[in-house]
Image (cartoon, helix red, strand yellow):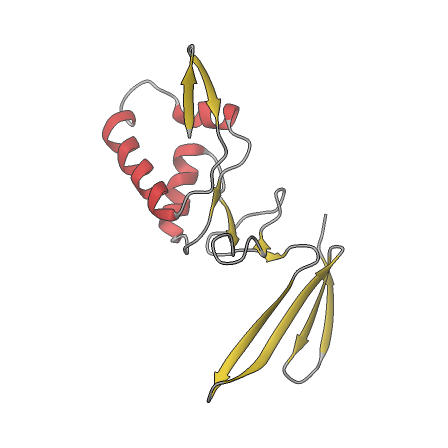
Length: 147
C-alpha cells in the first residue's frame, strides 16, 4: 500500500491475499501498462518485501506479479488461523505454491481423521534452523536449513 503525504510516497508493508494481487494486476493492465510509468522499477526500488497469505496463490498470478513488479512473492501460512507457523525464508528461492517450512520453535503435524481420532502421518519441527521429521512409522530424519 502506498500512502502519499506532501508528495512523498510511504510504503506500508502488507500481506495481501491473492485476490488483492489479482485486482492490482487488473488495475495495472487497465491504467498503467501502456503508459511511461515504470512500475517495476519503482516497486523494486521502494519495496523490500512483498508477501501473500491466507489463501493459496495460483502459479499464474505469482508469475504475472513477478513480471510486473520484479518481486517473488513470499508465501506464508497460518497468519489468519494461528499467527504465522510456516514461511519461506526472506532470502530463499521462492517458488509458487510453496509456503515454506516451520518457523524456529514451531512444530507442524499432518494428521488423518479416522472415525473422529486423529492419527499423525508426519510431524516436522524447526529447532534453531534444524528441521526434524517424524513419519507415521516413527522413522526420524534431520535436515538443516541452508543459509
